[in-house]
Image (tube, rainbow, N blue to C red):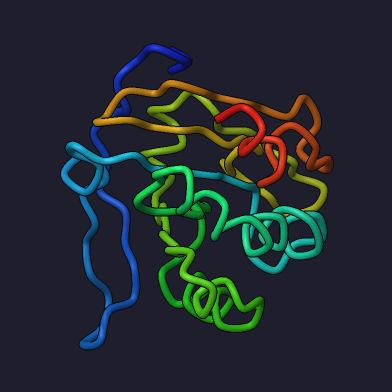
Length: 162
């Protein structure tokens, strides 16, 4: 089943690196009564993800906050250690973007947005999309048709839809 605009965010336990090691993040609890901008992408340290998608949210995070977004979150089917390193390397963590790992891909699968590109080693990864979630309900969702492109799911495009 594909989750879309108007649907509730699926139950999900993601992970982030905390001060004392990996921590579980319940996305639904985090978003209760709040507005979240969540963007998902195929993989940390990959081309378009590193050169276009993450930078677009670094550029626009202050604009999202000015429009009442409580948290900007990046989700990828990677482990928490990779997401921590990638957030530090790109400057996303310093900018205030929360880098959350979907280690087993359960959130991505529950969203109905898993894909595989075996020739490049991307197995059960996330399609590229971005969404606004208000109090657990998806109010805007913009998905790329091609995972190698970042147009409708970039920070500027999501901000324009807000």
